[in-house]
Length: 340
Image (cartoon, rainbow, N blue to C red; front, top):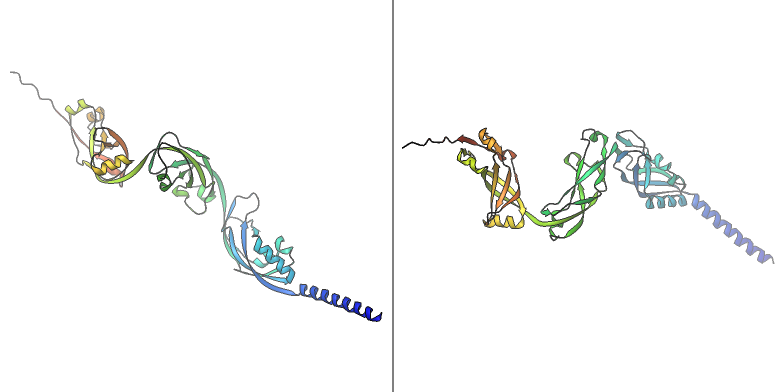
């Protein structure tokens, strides 16, 4: 009977020893490191933007083994958020071990943050204005039939207040479908494409964000277009036919140099083959001839096909001043008939 009691006592003592050992092991101070992501956030409802809004960090944890293991899981599975309510400007976040140890997610594990790498972070804090911008659509390389719709027709821009104060009240952004995407679409069909939002040059900075950054564009392609640079385009004067008998018009410069033409593919092909000729048209009114004006801007560019039909084409030049054509207008004096 005594032998049995001794066995029970030995087992009991062994179990107690194991429990004490496990408890002691759990309470022994343990140090380990873990990689984590910090997210910097303004207070709820704030219009402040913090840049950068996140950063990678290596955290050294200290405490009982079980607490350190729990903290490592928290750091690896969830980004740690730091709420920063600071004024605009550049700031340095220091004393990170104390700040991270005070986070509820870390504090609840029982572990302590004793060191971080890096030891601090430099942040830029800016107050943002929320601005509604109108969306215009740009479809390069095609001629559109009918209306173009865009959904949504406006987007929201988050703009630093320091920049917004220097901008006009109304702001327009551009929805762009790439030329490569348009090249794959067939004419005379309705198309729906997502378009990326492009900011104007005054807002093309990293601090400005767009919501949404893409919009849906619906349109119908009438024809495909191409571009072609022509060394020069001849100037053609157009006006009332009866005025040509009363006035003489001389052009010191008869061409517009280096003109880029954009038009339907068949027009561009005709220009290349020589069957289509492009003229820079200067239209003169009778009153302008009477006033002997000395300069007039090119009114339009016309491409004339072999059948004599004129097609308006889009044209651009390197120097817009070249579109101003100098004129020398003289009135033709009528000769009196000599009586026989």
